[in-house]
Amino acid sequence: MPTATLTSKGQVTIPVQVRTALGLDTGDKIDFVEIENGQYAIKPRTASIRDLEGCIPKLDYVPTIEQINAAIGDGAAENYLATLPASAPGEPQGEAA
Image 1 (spheres, rainbow, N blue to C red):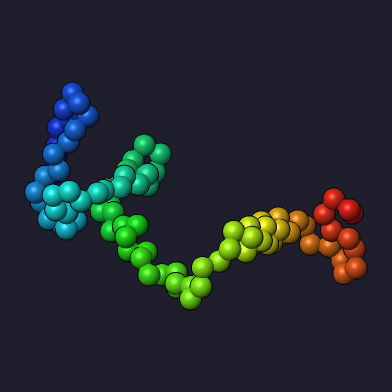
Image 2 (image 1 turned 180 degrees about the vertical axis):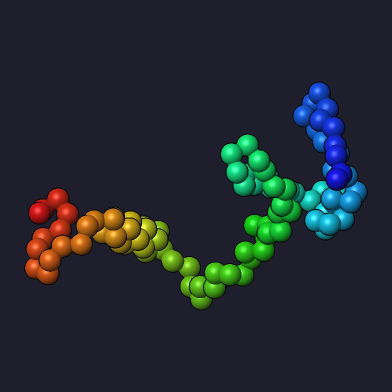
């Protein structure tokens, strides 16, 4: 079983056998995932924020600040309404109830 030593600065050199098995290279990020109380697993961080580039389609126009504010308000209202308990049809919802 590979082992490592913790330095006074909290640093650990990951043994080559573990780096190879995880596919780690210089500069790679790793995550420490708690699997049980007090036990952790090391996982390579495989995604980057840059991987999200292009996942939102570009608009063919530039929205106005009013359109942006309206969209934010609509989204906030939808999120708020989604948190309310379901009521019988015809019953008022929200603070008016």
